[in-house]
Length: 247
Image (cartoon, rainbow, N blue to C red; front, side, top):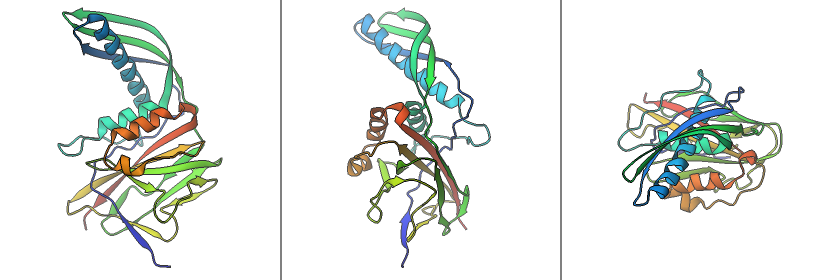
């Protein structure tokens, strides 16, 4: 059987892994301006709660697997990925404390919240981290229960859906799975640069998802909307970073 090739666009990524140690308290800050001070404070608190979730998810990353992510002018994905990760890390149970300050029509909110960590689905991914241009890339996926899998790759204009694809439509996996599937080659490419960092987002869900892949391709925010729509205990998102170097 002839292998088919999948080429990556050039993007900047971050690698993360959830720690087994849960954190139940987190802090966040938010600021908003509106013609109505009450509305400004509502928006500021919403931002503070979101910030607390992002801080909570970042504190769960293991030090050995976390890599530094630096936004460039054309590839600003780091904060975007942090926001995506925060939507899968847990839910806010209650606000324990808040500090509010106002100046004219601007409101500043600091919150201390209690977060219930999400029950993580039994799924893991692993692969070599460093490749040379032209190498075949493969990622091992392990699940301990039947789960549905989607694999995404960020690019400048939106999100590519790498799995499922034109060659493989079934998203249900129930054991060890190799990505890309048999018969498809994923070729390391830097697109002419000395080095590129490819970010793969592995989304595992308990239920089958209907995803508009064409819309995602031109709208990165649609991926965040999709993840926020799935109940937190029915999904797991793993961000996997691969470094590709030119020969």
